[in-house]
Length: 403
Image 1 (cartoon, rainbow, N blue to C red):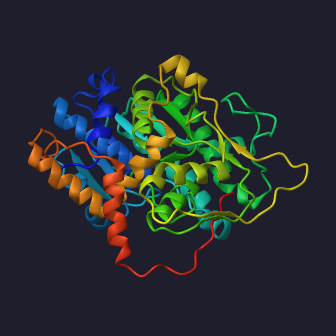
Image 2: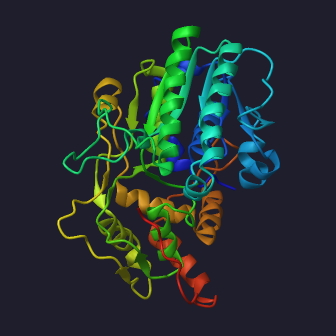
Image 3: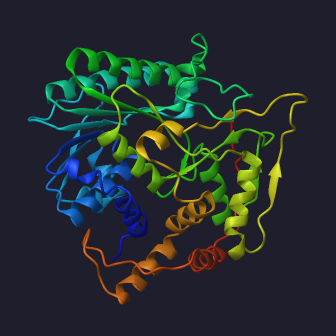
């Protein structure tokens, strides 16, 4: 069976050639390793470990090792990856020295942010402090915090892109600001531990992303749109479609994270994301256009809201010039291609077909998978479309909160 991410993982390896020598023999500890960011870190680490003989290990903290084994058995069973059970706020420290700690565990649920803000704040702040205490105890050299563009608060409408130097922030007495304020406190904790313990603390402020491992049924607009297209449902936008977002592909994200971990400057935040802003309505149209060649019938798109007269569109788009100029990082995979690759991965029949086709082509080392054959998204989605025709057409549609 081939790894359906082989093309992306080779892409990561190609653009991180100067990173892996620094991780030869490393012992890395990762929190949040079972989420979107974490899965891509694990996928790319395992691939590099197999291809480059890194002699490195990666320990993953998870609240449910069994659930992760079901979700990603090829990662859970990889000889260089080890799962440990625990809660980020109270986990027992694994024994021995760790060279690097990557802290990505945090509650990012919009529902939790609205309904249980205190547990969310507790997880972000106390979880970060626990991870930093562990890094200091384990005598780690470098600590990577996965922060968020939410630390900036609302983006001024006149500002096309948010730079790291922007001094704004969330409203501190607005309960819905708990996620952004929690991340601000997490960054402050990094600065304090860096000063007091001599720990190199790298901070990445993530924006929006797309790619395999992204759920299609939660509050991510681009995932919702791709999921709707694959199920041949109309794309419905609850709002007016004017807010601006930008999306970086997951394989590029992995390149940025590993590069910043190794080459980033301590306590100097880096925006991570795409500078290519587009409105939610434009995004929906792009998803349809990218997948339309194989969609029957053509997918309809509806915008339910109306723009407020005189109101400037909301924006959430980063300025990534710091990462580009200082570390040579840039967006490599176009958004159109990212949409198609994500749709491929979320098409079970397509993945199965690609695996069988690849096996007939001969094998390649890494993960124990044969080398994948190239196949077009059209072929992949046609398989999914035929399969879906056998199912009852789903009536009704759950609207999207795309704010």
